[in-house]
Amino acid sequence: MIPVALSVILLGSCVRESGYFAATGYAQGGTYTVKMNLEGVTATPKEISLKIDSLLTLIDTTLSGYNKGSLISRFNEGEEITPNGMFKDIFSISRGIWEETGGAVDVAAGPLFDAWGFGFSSDSLPSDEKVKALMESCGMSLLDPDIEKDIAKGFKLNYNAIAQGYSCDVVAQYLYGIGVKDMLVDIGEIYCDGLNPSGKPWSIGIDKPEDGNQQLGAQLQGVWASSGGPCGIVTSGNYRKFYIRDGKKFAHTVDPRTGYPVSHNLLSATIVAPSATLADAYATYCMVIGLEESKEFILGRNDLEGYLIFDADGQMETWYSPGFNVIQ
Image 1 (tube, rainbow, N blue to C red):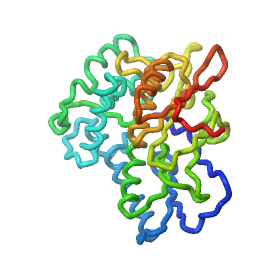
Image 2 (cartoon, helix red, strand yellow; image 1 turned 90 degrees about the vertical axis):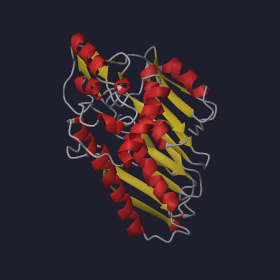
Image 3 (cartoon, one colour; image 1 turned 30 degrees about the vertical axis):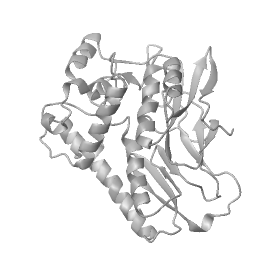
């Protein structure tokens, strides 16, 4: 999944700054910011920062395909590993998402992403024969629901579609555990609950999905305001990670059901869900299935809201579900 296309915005006068603390640092190839209200919390800011860093280190050494010493990298190389609880947890979640989406979100299709240059390798433009061969040799359908039975069998996993959302949820659960009620966890994707330092629900900017737009918050298409309740909000799109060959654009969203990058008019999908993990997965799902199916999917779920930006004959248009609170 591409880096998140969301920007935190604080609206209104600052009236509750004193109880808030922001932990910042580096993780998963970028920076993270975790803002929280420490009212009633006994843990010190230093203790909280150290714990957040330790959780993110655990995630990196377990799930990062860019860390060659991580459990997933060693698994992908065919090494016999002992999966920890996090490894088994995210695999179980991923399998459920694979089943629910009919294979459109498949973390076990890693070799396909690699072949198109959007995984952990720099390959691109595979032949039809290679795509067919990969389709027959990878995918969740070939793995046992008990991942420990598939250790050292040569399968390759890629959690890019949900790892950042999952990271947000892991940190949020820690914060809940020490008594934090108002929080915003931004680790490339976002989880939020409660109120911001201004005493208002958190507001998140949605970037305009123009090709090559790499600067978060520079050009906003809209702004979403939370209801004050717990949720994850994640954007996926095809405008930051792509390449062009012979005049044709190849986007980073590969449909595991066909083996090829998608080609449709949906530019980005922003999903609000009960968790950042699900928001991450469903945003990817929408980018696989396209505009009309995404609308139907979002409207058919009472636990989701969505904001879709699409190309309409060269013009950028938006659609959003009735409960998606756009304030700009």
